[in-house]
Length: 335
Image (cartoon, rainbow, N blue to C red; front, top):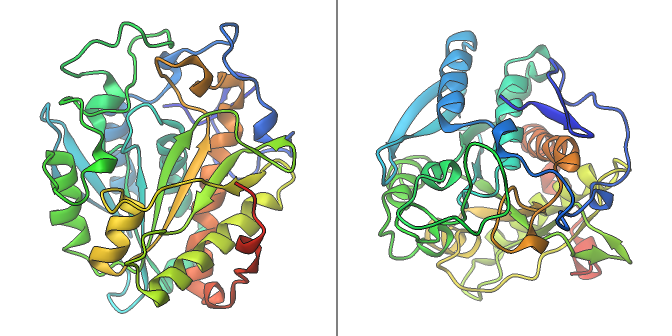
């Protein structure tokens, strides 16, 4: 399993948050036809499933649940840390788009982190749900259409779409695809969720203050969202922004997103009253359009950015500090 990558070298660490300070992720190289893009270093679906089962066996507080199957029949997993039903609950969702892999790599590291002594007492005040690699078929390139024009080399290509060539993050109203149905019927409608961070990857060229960003964030923008849900979404964003942007290597901007409720950030906020945050990390693991793909020298810090995000959100909800988060930064955060 890919753990953390620094300058293209794989590093397996028992303490994923302890990487040395580095240049901003946004300064990592784009593809440009020159950088190495090799998907064989990325965690496969089977490796992920095996890893989750091993962590479940090791961690007393962790529960592993199958919430459904993909188009091609792959089990879809939910990782649960449910210490008290009265606690606020946060859901982390990764890889609705199969070619946006590093958020899943970070989530898997965070699951290991959750079983470490560093999280002792934190989960007493918060329930944590994690759905990693929702689009398992797209992540494995096991789809019913050609990927011959995709950039990456290795044992597979990764695609945004599921096996039916459907964008899962445009299916949150009709809920036609089995992956979307599994998420809604067996997670969103089953658990009392207060917060959600939907983790994605964007293109490589977004900037803030003249510098390439390591990621972009956004709250629900549909006019139908409840005011309190919107406030808490902005507070969640403030927690993430403060945690990542203060590192010296993270540099976040505001995502330029739409208001369609077919998108999870908007639709889930309206349908379930869940405060949502979209986090778009810089660069994709594979794509047919070269400018969207990021050289893998940035992998390690993008994974670390995911871990930092999840850790900060869990801690802020657990200790209640999220309720005092200053949201004024949103007024001037550049897209």
